[in-house]
Image 1: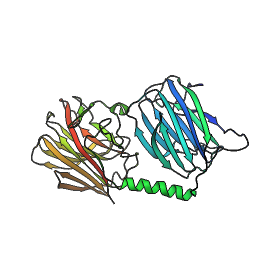
Image 2: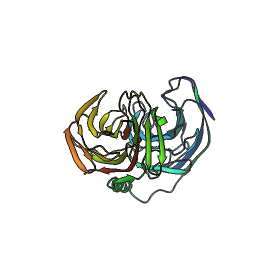
Image 3: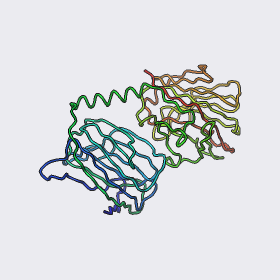
Image 4: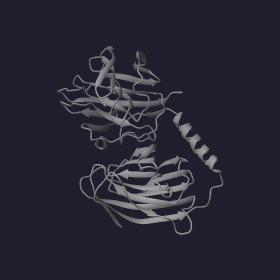
Length: 368
């Protein structure tokens, strides 16, 4: 079935399945699957599989992926279907224009798979209804008609779980908390460099100028010459949901740099703002507030080295910089209190030279 949308591309064109029995709703426990090929649309064209859709409402849980391999699981607003809050987020190691989306639903517990690989299990009780299942296409940056070919839809009822709903939610929540309390490490960080469960965003998904290269010694991140912005590789932890407070550490080798700087950005938001902790090849360091402009909160000088271990900590209003394990500076700022992403960063604004650094021994630790 070819589905085409010829306007208002930021909204989904969806097909709804109301179950195999017209007299009843979708079962509480079931699996569903559909294959979609994106026929026309730009890099942001995406497909979705939506579940727990109430009657006469835009509320639902949306599981979507685009042509760049960026996938999300969201609880969506009952008013207009926009994302209400993020359940999970990630980036596939290989992008394509054909995906098989699959979902297994056990009441509030939902397991989402792409091309036969489980990418996340989430739990949410906002929408208990199961009136229908939806699948469709959108492309928020398209300027011409978009279309996708859907095939091989399946729906199968599953045996009811023996656990009460509150126990299902408690079990899933407890597993998530156990994962959150464990420090996350990667000897070679970055998209397709880190082979663990951490989620790193590819540079082309962020329309970012620069290059990323995986090496045995670490991830080399390079920003272009005459850049008007920094180049950063964004990290979304395990599923895009960060704790309020944390610290992040990386070893940064600036030996290949041409007098530039590199560092870490904490409490990043979707507009590329946040706190930037940087170290330069000459040993100068800076803690900056990025809020539409760059405002230095503290700066100083340390012994120049080719390699530094940098730690940035955001704990309440306290923003702290450590270099080679030594606390260098604490500053107080409450401009940013939540985190959409954090970043590994290279570059200085308006440098005539390209800027490059090798990042290794990355760690992220949630603070109590």
